[in-house]
Length: 379
Image (tube, rainbow, N blue to C red; front, side, top):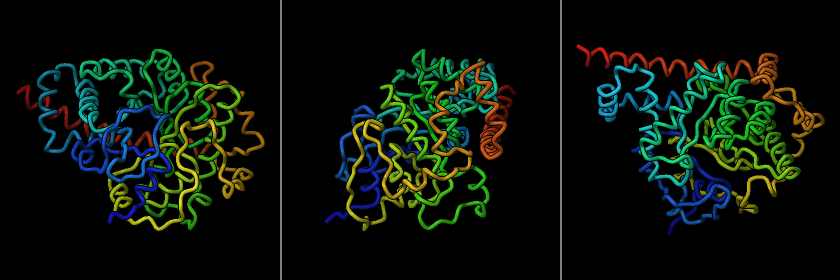
């Protein structure tokens, strides 16, 4: 007899994405690929037919994957062919190639991330995204099978609006505030990825929140709930599709189940947490509201969490003036107004800068390795 696990429960509450680019990891997970649209997912109750919708990546994920001995052929072949064009061409092509090979094992899109070097330059962001698109096309990957993650600054929001208008779909990442979410909505992003835990807490365990009820007490819970509430308000009042939330950066299964309770439509999970969910029997109360057919058409704040809407959250937003934020044009002057907000908000600025430095360090590690390989081949 097969008993239900916490992974069974999670799949009934929201869509599951994998926060890893390893082909070995993805092939080993208990998921089967099925073709379907994100807003038309059936309720899945059989553990043999989990649906793995997306595979996400960033500079850290790609660098770790590229430098594995098992992937050395990717590096050497790209250096041999494109070494004369420099490390950046090789790195971007490697990111696309690593992600594209995973497409047969997922139902939706693979995601690559814009370099943090470009987040203050909308023109540079657009150029890199156009290169990514060209490289995906060379891999026979169409526009509807990938998206590009952009750490969401002012210039990033302005660039995302132009890219989405051209059919190059984007995900707003490194999101820590309602304001960033509204900018993502104004940019017509397909996805948005708030970090439930900041990068610094991954590097320093003493910074991890100690809570007993994650959904109610975690410092990011109210922000996530306000974002979902804002998107539902915009959708219901205008009919305009809003970014689908693909929430990331969880330490444990309790946090993953908590964001599902908050109403997040997708959760992107690292391999150890997927294994923990798969290996833990589900002894929780029966599910009353499985995942909806549309992320915002019927969204309602869970009754037990409504007290959070009266609280001031870390970015200073209260429910009384949240709707007023919707009137702010965060795309004006290439995102200048939006960048002013980020600079004023010390908490958001610190978290955003920490994420940027983390990805820059990972990118630098790849640059050194690629340039060493170029030098070896040139001898």
